[in-house]
Image (cartoon, rainbow, N blue to C red; front, side):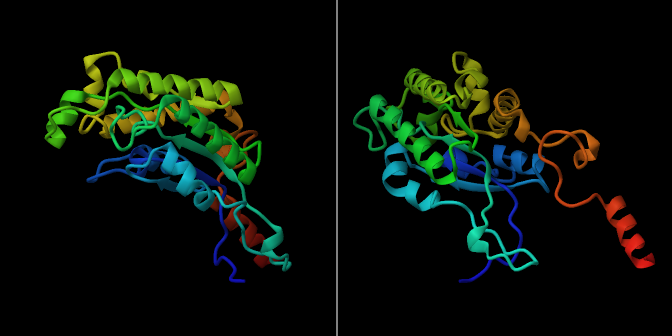
Length: 266
């Protein structure tokens, strides 16, 4: 069995469609995953598992067993404990599907709203069965949709989607989150889905621009602070020696040097 060649930090797993796939940014712009990675730098590793064009049906049928295969194996300790007996953990997971499911009936990506709800339940249950029931999960609703901008971008005569339908699918996300006691980010509300201002968050009527990505990041951090405050980055004690939150990995350099000098003088 080949052993990993470096120590694996706790993982933040982002599972979703193109809005997740593009979350590290497009064309030099920041994305919500890049902002998240910067916030958890030296604390956790962000794993992007976004799949452009996918809906929850494809996620259930093709992705779940391949993305969430079980606990993450980590290297052996210096004492020689086998890695097969040691596992890392997911700090938290995000599930961000629905923009494609909410396509209108007759569109290839459409998933009926009841099936969408059932699929979300299956995704959550699978994540919990592979990573543990106590793994924090954050659900995100589909963002708003700007039909005029999308038709212009794609040169379409009809949008094939609806802002109102996107909102209704978001209501299902909130229902499922409440059922499981999970955190939820209502991106439709965050991006002013009921206002013409929604277009200022979107790059093409469907996907996010930098403003939209920042809104998702801020909403995600707020949801974590409200529901899972113990997994926020540690703030006190210089981010390492505090009382709560996820600390920086390894000692800060001042203590590391002090310990090094002490060991040389001993």
